[in-house]
Image 1: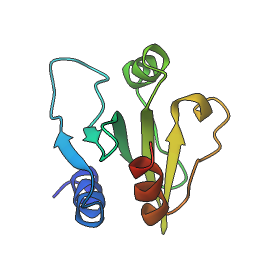
Image 2: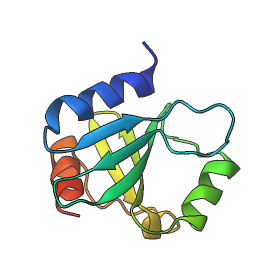
Image 3: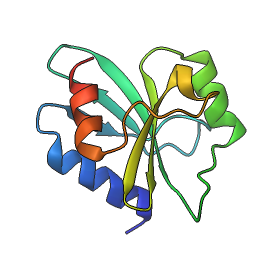
Length: 111
């Protein structure tokens, strides 16, 4: 199983109040990996990344998606023992909104 698939399984297992759709799209570059829908009727997208060493890379198409869709688009990075959630507006500052998978789920559930 690929690392991003494992990350999806982790977040899916602990987020019972979020309905997830995993997007496996090879025809439209930059489309995020997950579409989420929470109990507040809020849709959001998440790009999943598993860091190799100290780097998690976004393709130019992925960056473009987040620039063009600035509301409720996130990047979740698994790095060492942490799960860092970056919000669209924080992509340029590189400051995570939360740094654990549990806090990530709480944050996304509260949108």
